[in-house]
Image 1 (cartoon, rainbow, N blue to C red):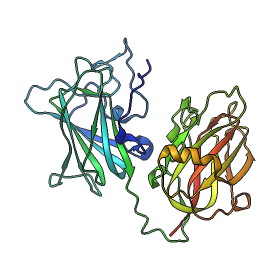
Image 2 (image 1 turned 180 degrees about the vertical axis):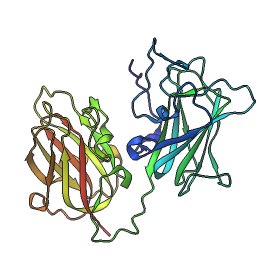
Image 3 (image 1 turned 30 degrees about the vertical axis):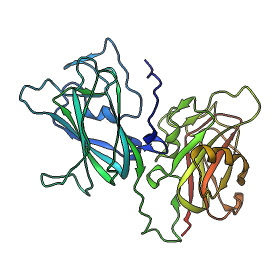
Image 4 (image 1 turned 120 degrees about the vertical axis):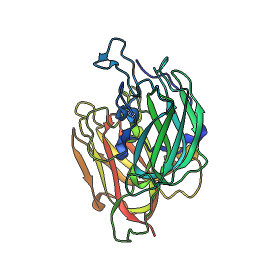
Length: 335
């Protein structure tokens, strides 16, 4: 079963899901997860319902589900974000939970270098919100943080399919020197995908995550192009910088990797994501067309790059179409 297309609220624009395991986020513990493990609640994939799937404790559900509470209390789940972030809003998703969803939920947050103890000071960023069956519940957050620990409270019990936390990493580059080379495009460093012409397969923002892709679905892949032209994707760097080298990884893409790639770039001062997409057609070439191969990490250094000075955005062009698992723009901060 596939998830119905939903309309995202304005607070999601220009953000990433800080609760993604791709950033290192994990559910640390919960008051109870008898029916469904709390770790399922932050999976990147859309929740599914399998009609005839049961386990030793009952119906298998794709999310976190506690048992029926009889003591007057409520259940909770502790989440550690992979990177501290500024939160603009959340989605408490009860998809497929119909007779077993919580009637309400709230979220508290704190910033801590270790797991919060009994003396931790929590801030309620989502007051108790009424929940319904089999639905997305988008709630804007007015206290953005930064936060790196969340506690989802459900009243009194039940199941949550997914928790999405929309925001951006809190990036402190004060300790990075002018000579340090960092991954300017990494999600953890504030990089994000601004737009693309097609992303029929996979998870497009996996392109900027750590490690190599675990399979062909862990990356950006376009549909088969049946007309002239090429596919493209635009990335905003976490901070402006000068590029030292670029990695284009086609891990797992064997019969469907792009034949070639090229990269344009610019230092963008102002504008919206839509205006940046329009402007990108006229950006200068940072890297001309380079041949790609199957299931391989391609590294391009300054001998293959144009010196454009500091840049803030890049446009990856793939010719004519195909899949890329990871993209890394490594360089020095423009201080």
